[in-house]
Length: 104
Image (tube, rainbow, N blue to C red; front, side, top):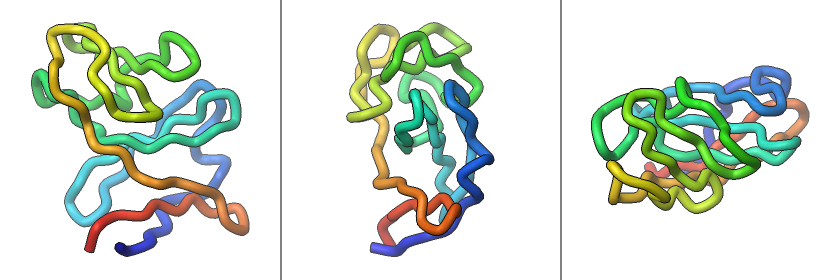
C-alpha cells in the first residue's frame, strides 16, 4: 500500500466533495459533518463523476447523471440503476494534509 498526499484539510468543506486522481484512478473525498470518506469517483452504472453529485444525507451520494446512490462509508450501491459497489480508500488528515492509502 502507498500513502499519498492529495490536498489540504480545507480543500473539502463539510457537505462537499473533492475530486483527486491518484495513480490514474479518480477518487472522490467527501466531508460528511467533519468525517472524511473516500470512494472511487466513477459511478458504476455509467462513467460519471460521483463528486459532481450531491450528498443526500449524511452518508449517501447521489450520482447527478441518473440518480444512482452510493454509501460513502462502504462504497455499496444503494439504488438502481447502479448495482455494483465502488471502491473505498482509507483517508485521514495528518498535519493539515489530506492523505489517502492506495494500492501500489
